[in-house]
Length: 416
Image 1 (cartoon, rainbow, N blue to C red):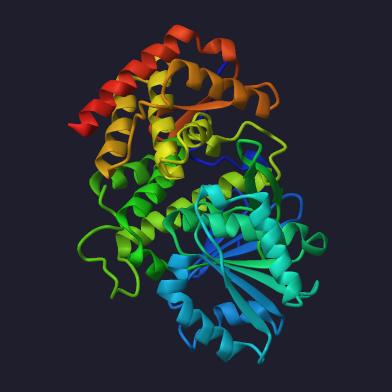
Image 2 (image 1 turned 45 degrees about the vertical axis):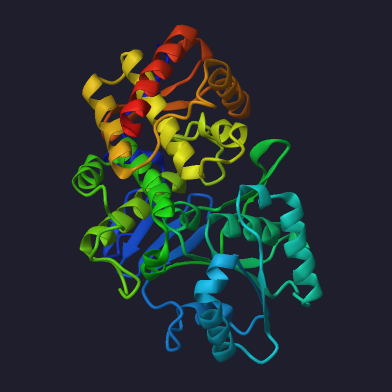
């Protein structure tokens, strides 16, 4: 077995990204945490801020307004976000920008609309609205809005500013803390994209109170990912509270969630940023944060996007846990805990139409090719620790088939 076992629960400074020590909390990966959020300073000089604050759209809040700086703003929202927050956003922009300095457009969402044509339409609307190189795009919504608008910002006039206001759990713990943008193309997820840090990334927990359960579960999948590979304490918290963000005490009238959800949010965001910091441009293609992202792209596309991204990631994590068990990299208890937590959250752990030996072998080969002819498959070795399986030959066909049979049994128990 050529998999390299990596214990990253302690985030050793040797990863090459030391942060200043004058913050409330200083993370060794170059991420400074303070009561209002996080600041990342990468070794290559890239610096950006991720804010976590309540009342972003309150008339008296200047957090978003402070980043507009008198610039022309072209904003994009999804139909759902427009229905829930469109009037408040328009009133906020009216109050904090000069007359005629902003426009707002509603864009279709869903993976089928995350295309090069969608990014081109964003650029066309921005041009028609008179957006110059000093202006900015505003992506107000979930991950797809952020990805498409962010990619458009990276190519419009060779790159302009954009702001993300993340309204989903996936957006706040994943898309909202990184620098990647992208669209789907050539039957491949995120085939075209760019590394383009946002001018600002704003996250208000109050937005999460209006999310449907399915979107909460998808966000929790990305949080489970970080817990499995890096933080057993976070994993134990999720085991005790698989209903996090869906508890009866949290509802549309709440201004924010309680201490539990705040802990989960902040921990997940910090872990993700610490992992990204030394490798923002992915020069090293072996990335722990790719746990759950080897099989899931094909599960999504081959299934016609019937499964949401977080659901496909959950199936991928369950399959990877069984592979780790069968390869002798993880014990049975570790595998069981990972799969059991996913099931308790309400996430799928098996998809009969896509979890076939043929398609999953195809997924392995596609990842191997995409990652420079190394597999870099992330598998858990214990809760809070992970390994890379580097070669296709390390996963014999019979092992993959055995893992899929075990996964089907897990799925049957989930459906019972």
